[in-house]
Image (cartoon, rainbow, N blue to C red; front, top):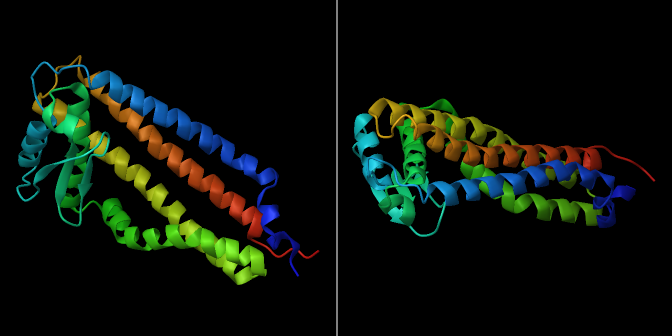
Length: 235
């Protein structure tokens, strides 16, 4: 019988490994919400809304088959590569603010990645269905493996979590690349003045930090699973 399979052994010193990711995640969420709160109240001098900018940037890049639709909530903006739809939250869609410009341009960056066949985005999109299944299955399999003392189930849980980690690591360069595309497009098109561009950059950098935090958290969780369950230890 392998003693560490009891659930109580999941609560040991290794839980401290998760603290850096947790702390960074809290800081990242606070920064992005503070940045959004700040720059969503700062009008841009051109009077450009997020929806108008998104339409212009799509046309600038020769993309004419991606509709722009409003979506409920705050910071819910996204590009759906399956249906080729760009969703903008209400404030971003209709308001002429610095935050609206930065967020809309970032989502257009994803549409441009899709249009250009950006390899990392294609890889992430291909992994998404598998990772969705993994994220729902990994902890039930882990808990069952702990209760019944099944090493193969624990190994399976580690493999499933590795897929989640890989997805997070791939997501990071995809998001950073979308932000770089966004800033370059804004500056190239003159949609913001030179003194407004650093404000848009600050907004996008704050958002990028959340993806760094997610990747770090996934790495530390994976390390913890390997340390706890990656090898057989007899009583």
